[in-house]
Each structure stands twice: as C-alpha cells, then as structure tokens.
Image (cartoon, rainbow, N blue to C red):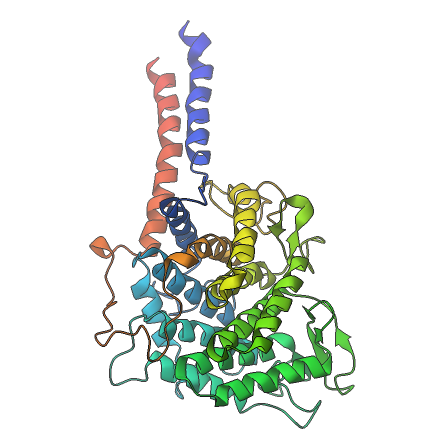
Length: 452
C-alpha cells in the first residue's frame, strides 16, 4: 500500500507548492483605499526588484541593465508618489540617496557618468521627479545644498538654454550633443518635457516667465505640425535636415500625457479658458490609448498591437497614468472621466496581467491579453504601480506650491523602515519564501521515499 500512495503524495505536495505560489495574485477592490494601497505596495516592491544601486558594485540611482538612466529618474518619481499616496515611507531613504547622487556638478541633473549620452528628454524625466519632490514636500537635501525647487529650476534653464532657432524656428533637439545619434531630430517628448517643467514651475513659483516659455513651446509644437488640432494627437517628431517638414506620425502616450498635465497646471495657475479647453481636448484625444472593445483598458497604440514595444516603451503607460492623475486634481471637472479610465484599466487589465512569475504578481506588457503575457520588467511594474496608486489621487492634497502646503519644519523627515529593511532585503525575503515553499514539498517527498 505504501508504494501505491508514494507517487500521488509527492505530487500532492508539489501541487500544494504550486498553489501557494500562484495564490498570491492580487485582488484589488477599487473602492477600498486599503486594498489599493496593499496592491500598490506589492508593485512598488516589484519596481525595486530591478534596482541594485545600493548594493556592492551597483551605481546609486541607476537600475540594472537594460534600463537606461532616464527610466531610473522616472521610477524614483513613481516611488515619491507612492509614498505621498499611501503614507508608506519604506522606500524614502533609497529614493533620497538616488536623487542626491545624480545632481551633477552644475546641480542640473547632468551627472558626469551620463553627460556624454544624456538627451533632453532624459534630463526632463529627472526634472519631473525633482519637481514632484518639491510639490510633494519630500525631504529636502541638506541645508548647504540647493533644495528641490532650486534644482528644478536649474534643470529647466539648462534645457531652455538649448532652444534652437537655427533650424525650424525653434524647438529642442532630441540629443544635447552633436556626436550623438538623434541630434538632427526634434522630438515631441523633449519639447513636452520643457513644456511640463515650465507649467509646473509657473504654478509653483508664481513667475509668469514660465508661462511664456510654456506658450512658446506649445506654439512651436502646433506650428510645426506635431499636434493634430483636429483630433488632438501628438506625433513623435521631425527631422531638421528637411526643415522639419516631414512628420514621424507615431503616437506615444507619454507625449500626450505631458501636454495634458502641463495644460492642467497652466489652467490651475492662470484660470484661463484657453488652457481649460486644451486640457479637455487632449483628454478627448487620449481615447486613442484605451481599447473600448476590451473593457476600456489602457494600451500603447503604436507598439502593443504588433508586439514591438521595446524596453523604454514598456514604461510609457506609467506616465500616462501619473499625469492623468495630476490632471484630475488640477482640473477637477476631468476627475470622473480620468478615474473611469483608471478603474477600467485596473479591473479589466492590471488584475489579470499581474499574475505572472514565480511570485504570482509579476506584471506583463499588454493588459489586453486577459492574463500574464510572459513578459516582465521595470516598465511593466512601474505602469501597474502608477495606474493603481492614482486611484488614490482624490485622497491626498493637490501638488503644493512655494507658498501653499509647505511646512516650515518640512515635517516629512525620512523614516527608516523597521530594522533597516531595504527593498533588496524584501526581494530576498520573497525569494526565500518562494524557495521555502518549493523545498519543503521536495524534502517531504524524499523523506517519504526513504522512510516509507
């Protein structure tokens, strides 16, 4: 009889192991803040799974290959918002160290390690994060160093100084230096970065010079044809060789998202009906990035249907969600529509996609698949994190300004996680737990065979 049950019992233990691994899939109640925060915490840990900058041999602030420096800057912005939306300070020290390590000698986020390859769009995404640190009242650098608002302005003026009127009547080039491929291209996202930084600084500082720069950038984008004013689609870019007359017509969600949020910031600051109208028009144009035939799920229209999203593109939905969330607060009439987009995407997309990997909560690239699509990475985790945590946007204050919301004591001082528990340790804990769940059944099988 022992031999009859030997194999089934081993398989029983192994099946239990598999069940334990897969049972960790996330069930998100979009109407329950605690449920949303719990899911966001899981995805935030997933983001840090790709970071070893605080380990021996790692580089502070940079994620593991193949993630470029710009995406690291974007990821820290996701985690600043994570803290602000959830109140969880677990990752604050890691974020703080990363931001300080990449300031650069001129305080404009052009560190020596990146300066020869850095593009205008790369610098902009670090600028977004530094601006968020100012607007969220994140712990400032030491008193003898420039603070987040000053650093944000340094990033902006560094970029604005490259406004190029020698070709195409203005605009920023994609690359900063002539020796880099792309210097002869003026892409939308670099100019969208300048526009969004100007818009945020206008509201934060009250300085209308930034409004002038935002208007200049908008007018150039529209004038050169990178904005389709019929549908409010933003296209990828133009080449300087033909005087910017040939438009590359790919649509990327982060281009529209930057202009959406920038317009909302300008509306909030100026109360101008022009910026209110532009905000709504861009929001209407965002329908291109939601598949209404599949539950209204967010997707990257230029690459997901043909399964051609590269490492960068896999993170774009993160910025669409982030900047829609900001828009919903700064232009309140947009809240219901934006929240519906986020809810539909979470319920019909994220909860089905983020079921992969050994931990059962790894997220895929396409949320239209109805299941995990066997892809994984930093961009996928960021996108899930941003989409989920922006369901909490109405439960936190609007972005602070230089005169509203910032405490004299800057009371949100960094709090070390209990026991100095870092994200890398958490990753090890989760890996250890998974290993335990796998090893125990195997040992039980061996024991059964030996001692039967």
